[in-house]
Image 1 (tube, rainbow, N blue to C red):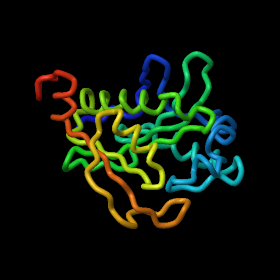
Image 2 (cartoon, one colour; image 1 turned 90 degrees about the vertical axis):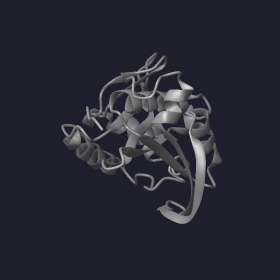
Image 3 (tube, rainbow, N blue to C red; image 1 turned 45 degrees about the vertical axis):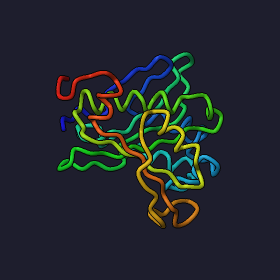
Image 4 (cartoon, one colour; image 1 turned 135 degrees about the vertical axis):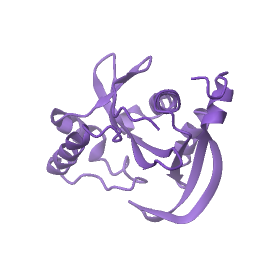
Length: 193
């Protein structure tokens, strides 16, 4: 795999960009403090803005690492922060990675996460040369799986008690897509990129 880090990436409606420390207030208010947003995530709602500031400071200190990927999802028309999408695990040996995402409740059901994830599949397969991308969700949150399906990922398995999240131990449904599947779906010849 190649690594170019958290590059600025555009879609029709969105800008995916690195976070900065000045994003703390909007991030805290928009999604990080929401128990509803974090209900099925592996991290709890932030109790106060100092938690958000500390997390942002950690992310910002890692942006010089080309294998660190953590984007702020921004709506272009009004520069509103909608949520985040990131690589939550990376395996260099297999060329595979796992993507995770969350978005503020005010922006649910508008296709923003699907738009961001679709663009990142393109980025990781075409630019970073990943071989396989996966994502998972708590089985009690099937809408997240619908996002994965819309992006061409296929369901592969459910692991019982696979991860701890805000609800405790959770059964997780896994979805994936290989480079070959991506290239076939997008009419590209394997290895021609």
